[in-house]
Amino acid sequence: MFKMPKYTAPDFSVPPFTGFPDVTTEKAGNGYIPKNFYATTIFPEYFKIGGEWKLITKSRMDCSVVIRNGIPYAVEMRNIREGDEVVVGRTDDGSNGVFVHCDGFHEENEAAADNQSFAFRQGQSRETSYSRDYDRLYEILRHDREHGKIVWVLGPACAFDKDSRKAMADLIDAGYCHALFAGNALATHDMEADRFHTALGQDIYSKEVTFNGHYNHLHLINLVRKAGGVKQYIEKNNVRTGIMSALVRNNVPFVLAGSIRDDGPLPDVIGNVYDAQNAMREHTCEATTVIALATQLHTIATGNMTPCYQMVEGVVRPVYFYVVDVSEFAVNKLKDRGSLSVTGVVTNVQDFVVNIRKNLI
Image (cartoon, rainbow, N blue to C red; front, side, top):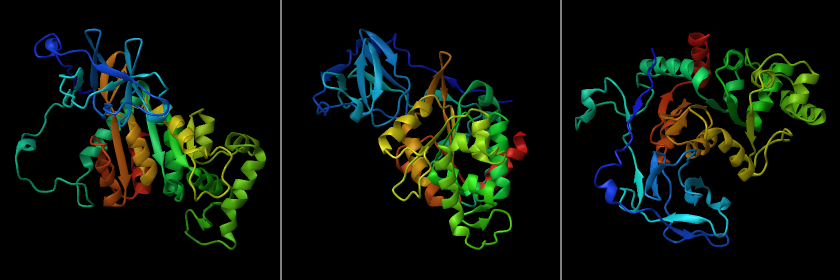
């Protein structure tokens, strides 16, 4: 039975916290922030304002902190306005009115070996055992289907295979997806698979390369553009298979972020990267579980926007972030970019999705 790790907040009623000052702020300029600005992390962060320590919610790393009406907000530099009161100071031990709480969550049955100085097999590789990670993920997904927000980040490989495409659609139908991030390719090839049974012209089951199949995805994009969008195309053509159909059928929001290499693209694709980032942020600031499959850049983008905690119904809880890829480099790269709480799984993403579906539905 899944048990949410308990969060233990700092005791701000005792020294040295009682003797620490309020945060210091300086006004932002026209298009820039104060020189000694404070930048957020992925961890729970408290700011002393008016003598009271306040936890910042809906956070993300690499943001400035703006104090508005006594409340701290994580704000991207591009969204700060002239005159905003921006927190300054580069210490986070509380002495500057800012405290970063890195070890607030306590897992039961933590291995005693965690504290030893030498041990084998501490990285993520093809040889790593993932049985416990899978079992843990099943429990988390069952819990968060009803009590959280599950966000999937999908690369086109998820739609290149008949079984994984159906498995992902089944997971959406079963309520295991509350938002989905992808690019033009995932949506295009998923709907191409419905119409032509191909992805980039290759049969999604037999792998047979079809004659003139390289036209299929362009033809599909054209049809969707003519219909006015993904939802209109799916409803007009009564599309009943695949990932995009399941999203539309279940009113699950999706964000398709554009790329400089896009064909078409589909009319739903957000071409301005900052608009796409804003749309993704609406969901990452509420996400409790994120699963990113075979899309390195979308994964890093999502990881950079996702804190390691959320406030749900007044309780601080961890955010679970899984990155899955057949490449060890892709799996481990996210940690290099600051998302230290990620769980990596090195495997074929098509097998991963089918396995998740088999054990949950």
